[in-house]
Image (cartoon, rainbow over all chains, first blue to last red; front, side, top):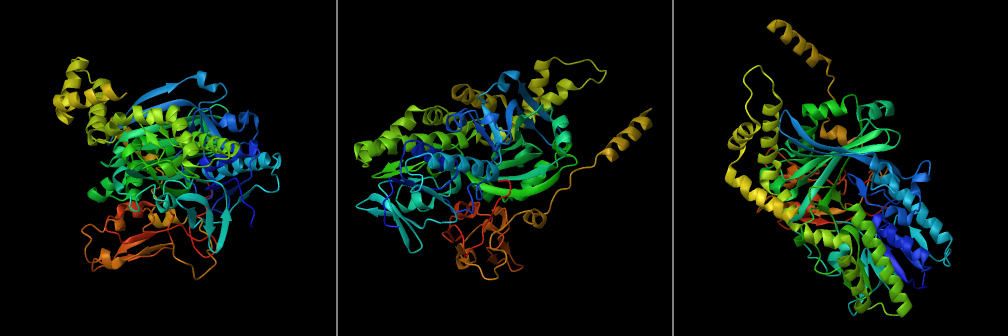
Length: 441
Length: 118
């Protein structure tokens, strides 16, 4: 192939597919390359796709009988756990039943493949129906650079040329490192291993157990016992007839505490309250993938170069600030903004860093970088040792005391709380943490 | 009365049919890999186990790898096999000794995963 593309996108995950959709709609000639057998074949997420950007890419996607998504979220739960108990903040509202949904649970092998079909439809309707395409089963070995400007990619012996390259390769960003935007070795400090089982139930059992109605779903995050003393947290999301049950665990912390992620997952699964949730289920897949923590210190030095942009988790765009684990929505928005910049560059005939810089600005003006910048303190707090040990233990201890009725004179809540604090932490530690918390949220 | 309570407690405990905790080998049995029919595959990760077995103070890959690709023998030596790798990336960050040369598997000649759910 000697013809030049306007753009080559490396990686057909959510960032790459979102970018491709925008390019197709703007009649750009592009190549979207995926190393897996199909889009989603190599992707793992928790996972909930938060926000409503999906409706921009696939309008009224919820009307489709069997779309790529599993369930919409109208029930949120944040659970603190010790070895016996759970203490939850639980919020459910029919407000979240309205479309566009503000979050849908997805299984990537199905979702990405579905989204790729939508992108293919957009390509078919574009001016470059024949010349643009999605190529799977191809591993990109190198981004071709000329005078520090991206001019294409190499796979094996073959080269493909383009005016621009979007790297959307995911968190294990080898090409990002190759072009010099990330160090060759990235230390484990702000990276976690996500690990989960997909557990199947009879759909009726699942719906009754989690009080699901139609396609409504629940997301549950866990702090404390779930990670066996390691930095991170657990999650449970309801799919159509399965649940995704797993956790994220800090890699550096596992290294130092000599913990195995698969042991931690069994530890989490053996908790009595979790056992009640998954009783009778059958594991149908086990998976794992690295995720970023949301700490800005792990992010690449820059998001662009001449003729080149980084989208999605290639740029470590993911954050867990306590409210939700957001990564797929960041990928989607950054893919959209990246592609819009490429469209502008073509209009101007200028793919240099001067135009590419506008992507960085657009991302900075969007909720993605605004949230990442505004919630750094929350990320630090959530990843501080007290949050996955002392605090959940203290909260559960208080809960146990508060809810125990034992025909003895009942102590006032304040007294109970004070006992729990003394037992599991100190006022001084809590004051420090509370101060951090108040500042961060 | 107290006996009655204890009996009830036992009944309740018996009623629970807890979900079996899976061994790692059982978990990996649920994973679909590529090119499984091929006897010879090109490893996508190269590990310089000489580094693991000489200077590394923690040998952490032997416990942080979710697929147990890194094992330690009775003499405390680290060995690596790529066949069960699920391409998560953990070892690339966990190893701070420069022993892990990580890459994605070749679609034709490598192993690697093919998620059914993901």
